[in-house]
Image (cartoon, rainbow, N blue to C red):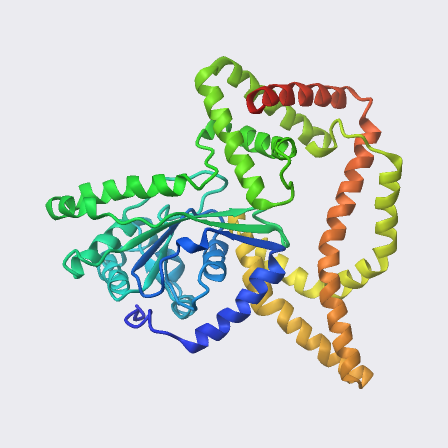
Length: 454
């Protein structure tokens, strides 16, 4: 196994590389990013163990690395050991300051036994005043819910305190990562930082029984992260509750006269809706079940008719439709230019991404492959070809800038086109029995939710 002895040492090459990734991550891949309560981050030099929910593969690590730390610190990440199996990949991950932790299913007995040394190395980073970032769920979840916390982070925290005779004062920093869309380029990202906490109350317990102290810290830590997280912890009705949060967030924000297209407001609305639905389940279980069944029927009909929720019972004004058509017609030449000139990197990126079975890793592959390989290489080749053909560098530069700009247009054009087609389809079937039933269910569901929320 490769050495992690100096993984927390400042690396200038790493710093330069991260500047490039940060630029792409914050200003190209994501449309907007928000970081709340940044003042809660302990100063550089204080031993800090960051714990966060885990939903979106590598993008979760990038979200924390590229938004949280303005003091240029280089935190060390802990990741599951199975991704370190190939030597070439392991060397790249080591360069990115990522250490493995092995579960029984990740490797052989020797791998699992190596955890003790790896945990001690991570604890040494904390003991030296460094920052460790870990996702205690140990695997990304497929939606807005939290899994159980594994005890790896607790082992590291207590081991660090033990190294300094229990006088280190490790700060544990709870964080929530939230996305407007897991999979889409140009979506929004939000990082909410909770208040750091210590665990002195468990140190005597740890001296008596390690496992008891681990579980006590796990319970405290999970509760702190859960406070920041939209947690749909009713798995049998996850899809229904998730859909209700999407349906009712805009009406709730408008009722409160808050900005609708602001992700922090959307997240607060989702947490309010989830809390109200959970309360409804406790106080009126039969009515709750009826609401869930209605929502399930509604979602099934939406799928059957190939419609989106936002077009149901929507006033589809002809002038508005004409403006949408006009926009698409005027921008069509730029859309075609963008499609043609960005086809190769988009196709190659999608080709590799589609081979990944876990959909929650798709955005990670899109980001990594697109950022590091396909788009940079293609743009360099394209600028060279245009320069040679035109014999003018400024023409090649303008061509690349237009190609780059229309890449964004292609993405947003497709969204607007899908919306227009959805409007046409809704108008086409609005007199059908399925649409009438959708309209009825929509009204009944919103009436129930209005009663809960308002």
